[in-house]
Image (cartoon, rainbow, N blue to C red; front, top):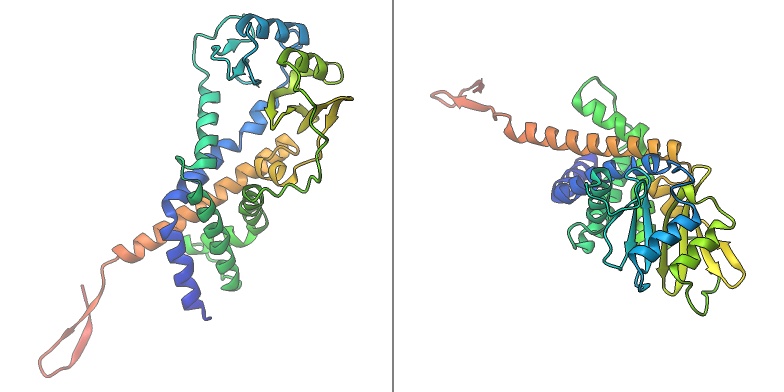
Length: 306
């Protein structure tokens, strides 16, 4: 297959999936900063086991909550499935203002993962992203020039390890591939939420806790520790670490928050630059006035005319 055909495939695949790719890339860019801003240890007096348990009992006296999440940026506690309002961890009262950063990150995650309830489009667009990059590689080494086309090719070739890692890990996540092996067995009966908080506090610092959730009958906690978002489950023997889900850690940038989050940010900027420059080059090509040759009497051709 010659380069002309490959270029057409590269161009038209990008154009067909341009809109969903823009949404995925922009929301991915926003989510790139999440590990960096969330890995902020809260003051121990705000999130110690006794205080969290007291807040759960106060705002969920009937024990309806299935889990909790903590926003380090907004300093808020949210009880899942209870109908309780967001709780201000500083005052212990129902939060009155809005958590702008948290709301933007939540919207970005939902859009990035579900694309307005069109999950099939997320899968198709991610496959298309891998195809676009693969076609670009098959076209061979570029000639680097100080032009939009030269910068487009340079960004693609020098950033290819990061650029390919993002959609490939996304496809592994969408396929359910975790490289974790068999998880520890679930407890016969899930712990009440207050007991789960006290259990995790016995062996771990709650200042990095982001969530406790019931997944398939198994209570799970996620905690930032030494820059990594670790997952734990509750068993009959206590709290046990879950094997690392490397596709998720790599894709979300939670394996070493400052470095991995920064790499994800760079990757998102490169993807945005590649898609944007490609669309601009296509638009220039289509909008550029076409030259035509005038014809003089007797059939003699003259130079191009405007």
